[in-house]
Image (tube, rainbow, N blue to C red):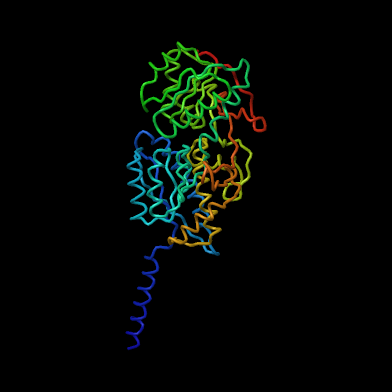
Length: 410
């Protein structure tokens, strides 16, 4: 009888232990909607690396601390395939089937605009580290936030510097690809040129992915001082190659996104020299952070060790999006899984968030045309010099004077 009692007790303890081992510990389930395939895959994987770097550091430390306990984060991916319709489908799956607590948003504005209404329907907060079209913020999505300011907030920075150079530019050609971000960038370039009394000789929106060589041949005959182009990474590279092929160098060649991405200089080599761009962050920027990374330099070193590359502002903004969620959920004091009431409360906390990070301040606007965009950052004018991207303005941030006019192709 005694033997049977010990056997029964042993079996009972074994079942309890097996149940404890088999049960999953609570984690924050975070959906990542981005383009891991298709034409936007290069940028999509930049966002992926930024989100993964944040998640790795959180989990290395044991997780996010809530009321004295630590909860790891689990990233669950939805491939947008560079198509808005696929982004909506991915958001639907993550929300309805995976029951995510939170979302980290896509690369590109068009994809973000497709995912946001789905997450709105399910009342799931999203912070995106890579969407800059003003259209997103004008929609005033309650559950969508962004760590990068819209392009109409940042895009004029390089032109403001170029307009002060000698001889000042008088004529410009402005082009944009046919997608939400690129069109908004081109509109900002056009409007800024007009404000600075630079005549816009031609303004055009062209099909995404087209061969730009014939187009640039026609532009060369116009002899503009400035060529300003709104597009994504691969298109920016194609534009430089087209100008190189026809041997035309304007006084200033301006882009927005792309010049800070390592792939741009890697693909073009010396042909990337003296190209202008805009940003809100570089690895050399002097910042002070309270969560994970103390400054921009430590973050850049971490990325270099993990991926062997120098991070651009998109990757940094994606890691900062993770920090925004981390800070907000810590302030809320809510352990996973989050219910609907807690997700609504998290939105309220995000709206009031005011933190300093390696990326700079994160403070989301809660009214006006920049609703839920991070407008606490300073727009920077950049130029590629000596194979590196340097800050040329504003004056308080300048690392080197602008090189102007652009040298002819060798």
